[in-house]
Image 1 (cartoon, rainbow, N blue to C red):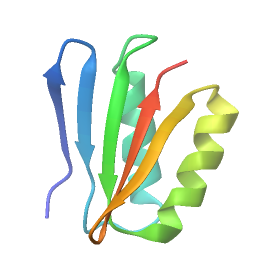
Image 2 (tube, one colour; image 1 turned 120 degrees about the horizontal axis):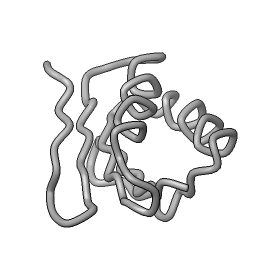
Image 3 (tube, rainbow, N blue to C red; image 1 turned 180 degrees about the horizontal axis):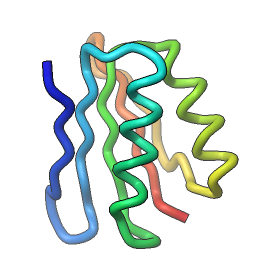
Length: 83
């Protein structure tokens, strides 16, 4: 189990924090967004549903946009645009 943050394309990043529980997904999400430029997109993949609400609150407070949220099996995917 290792956190994985990588560039997937031009202005598109992926953060995989499956297996982690609060507060780690939120912390890793925040640190990943800090490394990105404004307007770039982060695909955050996680499998701890309770982390979703804390991540949403953090995004809202920081002025980032949750563009999409979807579920694929046991995984949740948030598409986040840095504000």
